[in-house]
Length: 132
Image (cartoon, rainbow, N blue to C red; front, side, top):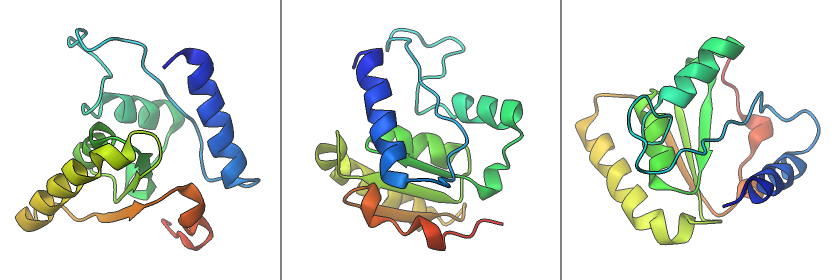
């Protein structure tokens, strides 16, 4: 994905969410898979922790939205309370692996979280989301 594509996806997502969107920031990582040392690459939650510290975001009142298993893992490892997996983008081909990961983590019952496997952002009722 080029940076132009990245910005186009984010613009579309923000337009879908509309005015008053609960999104504070969107982060990206241009490092390739070979970059492992101190990398923000998912499933590491380092990017989430950085954003939380920089923006003073309470992770206990945060969610992750993604179309890849690595997105869901990053949110889980950051102990976010809500993990949202979309079927758009890579989501359809990754849904089975996401569901296996979630099922495994729910069976362990070591960490509380809510999981929403949805088709697209328009399907999620953000207006009813109360994290405070």
